[in-house]
Length: 115
Length: 115
Image (cartoon, rainbow over all chains, first blue to last red):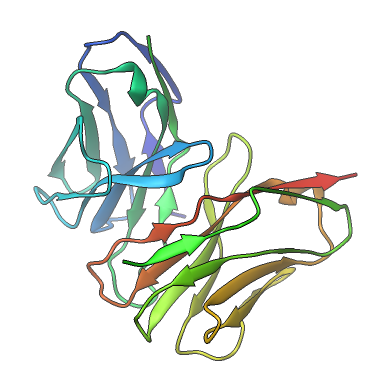
């Protein structure tokens, strides 16, 4: 089974702090994603990556950056956390983009509170 | 741009009954993929069912089946013999056949199972 592990389930940070959310997958998947989940808004894509050192902006990249130095790890960085970044963050990985390879596997999520 | 609409934010169904969750989408493409994902409370999101648009046969997975109406751009999920474990947030999702394209999620439907 594919395992996608997010480093923290719950995180509390203060406004202005630099925050790192880590995600690791164990199935050699090429693609990795970071989503933000808010009530009534569903999942919104922040950033995604097709390969090591590659990154693409999603729908709401403002205030975030990412890093993918190794294939299995995809980090989301909040350079200066703000209260409007309080949310549930979901990481996902996907083998590739071809037919049958496009199932996304999700981590358990990190609930971030910015005070 | 493609959009996915789930018009029912919440639904309830009696245990052992059948329930149908609605999903419509908008696209100008002729070939694409559709998904239903399930997010149980405090647990990881998982794939329920996947449909390839060029296949006319509706996908089924045990008690879960879809009603795919391509002309109407409708992709509803039917859950038969509902069980308490089916209580979750359900997300409908769309992906084009371009392997570099991201998945687009609807806003979700929260399903309650009444004992």
